[in-house]
Image 1 (spheres, rainbow over the protein chains, first blue to last red):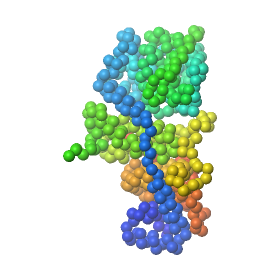
Image 2: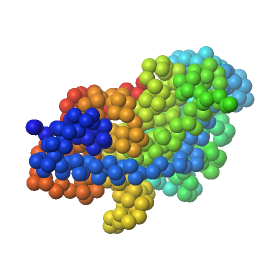
Image 3: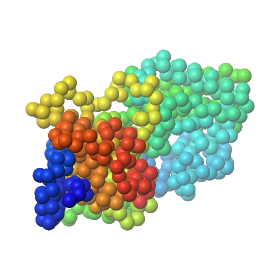
Image 4: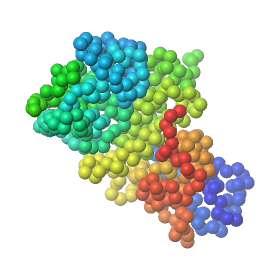
Amino acid sequence: MSHPEDLLADYVGGTLDQRERAAVDAHLPGCARCSAEVRQAEAARAALSELEDVPVPFGVTGPVLAEAGRRFERRRGVAWGRFQWAAGLAAAAAFVVVVALNVGGEDAQNAAAPERTTAVAGGTSAEGGAEAATPGVIHFAGLERQTDVNYDEAGIRAVATEAAGAVVAAEDARGTQAALASTVQDSKERTSLAKECVDQSGVRGPNDVLIRLIEAQFEGTPAYIGVYSEGPGAGQAPDHIVVFVVAKDDCRILSTASQRIPSG
Amino acid sequence: MPDPPARDEDLVRRYLSGDRAAFAALVERHERRVYNLALRMTGREEDARDATQDAFLTVLRKLSSFRGEAAFTTWLHRVTVNACYDLLRKRQRAPLLERGEDDLPALEPPPAPDHADASSLSMDVQQALLQVPEDFRAVMILHDVHDLRQEEVAAIVGVPIGTVKSRLHRGRIALARAMGIEQQGRFSEDPEGPPAPGGSPGASRSGERADAAGPSEGTVSP
């Protein structure tokens, strides 16, 4: 008999019928290879059965449920009321035009939602629209993972200074939009989760445009760092960089920094 | 007598028709299974958290296109396994510079095997699991740890059932070797033996058939 390889998984699992089992039983004593494999597979299976479930750590699914709630509200059009205050009518009108010209943002589901035109001022698609029309703004490339990096106040200020320099460079390059991101980009889901977390802190102004988003630590606390360019809006060049640091678990504000963009 | 618990598919329908609590019920029902699958696949608590969040966010995003052709749990497992593959691939791509000391495996191996105590045994097994190529690891975890039927495992990873059997057997042998359980026969130099430990996606394809549509390229859409 040739080696009954296709039967060995079920032999070890105990799910062979009587006839097949008898065939393997007859083969094993004369085959060192198969009997060694069976011994190893049985040992592995026994070891795997010892692995026990561990409880889910606190806070793992909280952000998911929060996101589900936000999506739910958006679907029901509640978002309008929540974001109206932040926008101002003129700014909202400007964004509506911009976003309408830039359909096809990162989240097709959002873009297709009927309340898009009213909710954009605070919604996740606002950056995508505004940055395209605003000179000197860095292209936002996605969430950067720097979870090993522990920032402090000076580090956050350095991030702001670096961003201000990059904006000046982008202005000098006249329309060339460079990405600031230097590290691994994360999934869309995690990027949008991080964005919502920074937005949710409520510190962001209506004309702030997200240019960089980092997942790192701030003084030992897992955090998102949002870097925004801030300006008068209406297509004018930004004049400040603001950096918001929020805790990853509950989106509370941990720190901020701001840096004036030197005018060219 | 209390009502029987709602089926997953009914909870999906209820969420889509406006019952906000239905999604929370789905998450609550499955989070432990998803998290533990991710923990066994990635071996790191932080990665397991990320993969769990990615998986549920994908489910949330695609829930409206879930047609119920496959069981919800099959789909959820597939999304979770794919989230783990994505994460592991990102880890491989990340330059070494970004890997600080905190990035070492959360479940550190004990200095010497000590099978006297159950928790250290569990850590040995977890460390050894990470040496098994991903495709084999996924099948083994789904079948031998999560007790899913081979048919269900085949549906989750998107391969024929014969491939599941073959990965299961080869994966178990690779795990035994990674745990230091050596063959005691004369044929230890067998050229068609199990995949070498190492975990690279390329290595996992060796010695297999009917594997053109492996789960790495598999889709997460329902």
